[in-house]
Amino acid sequence: MLSSGKFRTKDLVDQILIQFNTLNASLLDIRTCFIFAVGFAGAHRSNEIIRIVRKNVVISEKHFTIFFDKRKNDQYKLGHTVFISKSDCECVCPLSITKKVVKDDSG
Image (tube, rainbow, N blue to C red; front, side, top):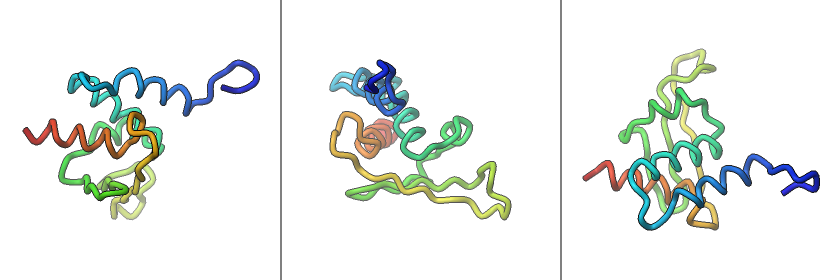
């Protein structure tokens, strides 16, 4: 928290993730966390986040990548790959949240 009493954006995102990313979280809760975590970590526009498909997500041990085939500032139409790394706290980690979404989507 800042000295003026106002929260920083990261603090607000962390609070949302902590509230929704629980052991008994529904798929809707996990997807909400995914939107906030990936949107904040990668500074993506909402219309980019809703177009993410499983085939464009590659998960590694310490990071994951998302390939965007279309972005607002992609003037050469080549697409863009974003790397998002693991964070220390699992409850707010974009990688752990993405793994949950992928697991739930795969069956």
